[in-house]
Image (cartoon, rainbow, N blue to C red):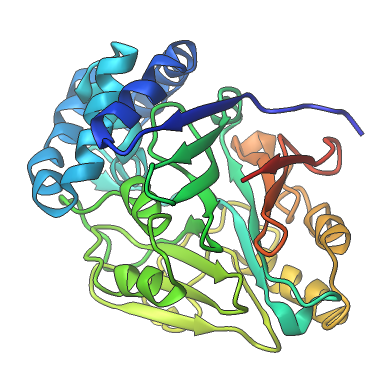
Length: 357
């Protein structure tokens, strides 16, 4: 196994704008690298970088009303990095904006396989949430670990792309959030709370119920899975769409999710990235592997499951480079232990490293 450790940055302030300034000032180089990659991604969808920035700025007035503190954090990232608020907003709305090609809808590639294993399913009665994060290889090049201390007793550790508020993470109240792509017939272009803001907001929750309530009140423009776990043994997957949010409960302490809408499959508009198997394959496969060891699951066994190549190259451990999708990170948030285990790349090749809360 190759040892490959992510850069860690530390932010501490009770003031949202100052948190952003501290964040942005430490990742100027990473932001520049991300911008170069996303310029090409938007061009492939028919948008100039100027058009992308203009569309991203349309979210600002809405966020000033709905999540003013987090919007201040984004402004701080922009000022601290010197990248400009419009660029920071593109990087934080890329999930919403890149779901559509100019003038038409575009079906996307598979992205991510998520899981929850709660206390009843694990060997030492602990809760672990996590995922394999699949995306374009350029996105994996500039990832880093974000340690956040909000100065009010709330701390978090998470993995993120440059200038994003966070991508996935866990907090000091024992809450974790992971996500995977959904595509439904309800998806539309529009202004909403972008998923990067939503994830950061969830990680400000002090209880599982508070985190779930935030998802229930979400009014997204495009669909996405939110996978929330807590150290008190609770967990829930929310299949969110612009019209309705569908909860998926744990079964024997386990829940998994790929990219299919399982509660209401009639609205699923996914076009499989890999025609050799159905798009829901990875979520089902991970559930099968975890259920085999239900009651005996350990972090080491989860890591083995996340290295699975059955049905490849678009397997749980994704190597589908021909379709520009690979596993760029593999993540376990060990909520009772208070640390994350993360492999920066395909976990069959890269060793997991520990990142403490």
